[in-house]
Image 1 (spheres, protein in one colour):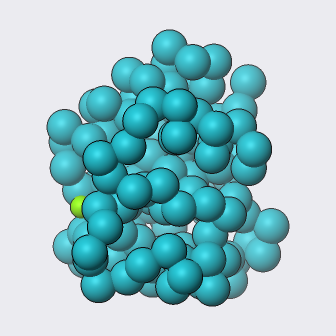
Image 2 (tube, protein in one colour):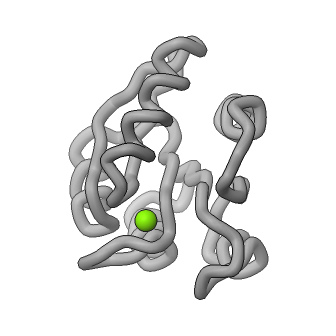
Length: 117
Ligand SMILES: [Mg+2]
């Protein structure tokens, strides 16, 4: 079963993603509330894939993505973020993301991105 680390500052978003994953054959490794915690938990737990928000306090998702890739160049990070933010898909892919899903997302978009990672 593929393990996923959920990184999002919104409790509601984390809950929705967790619910979706737990009903779709994924294991939720942990939830992190910002990029810094996401980086720490990635290093500690080594999940198969990370579902990463962008806009978060402390450390945003793009900086966390870069830090995770620095630690583990093979890390698989899927960015899940609202459109029209400070960063777009091209920025995320350049920083090493395997996929970029725009909020509001369909369940299938997230599952497909995580499955193919
Ligand atoms: Mg956010």
